[in-house]
Amino acid sequence: MSGVSGVSGMSFDDLSRRTGIEIPPLLAQLLAGGPPALASFSDFEWIDAAEAAGTVDEWLDAKWQDGRRFLPFAQSGAGDAYCLMPLDGTGTGTGGGDTVGVAFVWHDAEESRIEHASFSDFVCAKFLQTFADMSWLEESDLSEEEMAERVVADVAAVSAFMDAGTAAWLQALSRLPIEQRPYKAGPRARPEPVPSLIPQDRMDEELLRFERPHAEAFPVKPRWEIGE
Image (tube, rainbow, N blue to C red; front, side):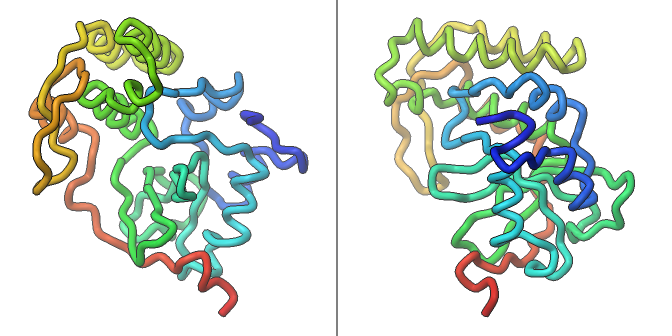
């Protein structure tokens, strides 16, 4: 993908002006150089500015979503959208300096939440999830050595633009030895052994710093209902 512009010439700066959502410095720095693949993130694919604009036009424009504003920057394999949103409780904001959070907007769910208070918090949460469950990389037929190298490389690429304390913390975790540990994919799931750098309970504890567990849900109109 193109980090800044798509084939139409649309840039994320253009989309930022259109939506009134300011691109956080960390994301802007990643986009400026062509974002790192972040292959260690499960079910995460960057999209370019033209694709992001298309997602807004076809689905997440404020006119379709009760005034809520979205700026997509990545997607899942199923087409769910990782989006910047104004962090005002409703996602509508007023433009011009709104604090920006990150929401994962399911393509087939009736509601979503702004789960992270900043893009940096979102990145830290995704890394913690990777550190606790690296089975995503194991399924890509990577050896443990290759998995470790991939995670260290991803952390290095992103943490270069983060504050020194957060960067050092992430880098230290990324260099821990890989071990097989039990991991539960859901509250009622059976624990399964997965390659990991940290136990799941440590991930859960650390995530409290980077997630908004009591974030208010907001309705989302599904893509297939747009225009009806």
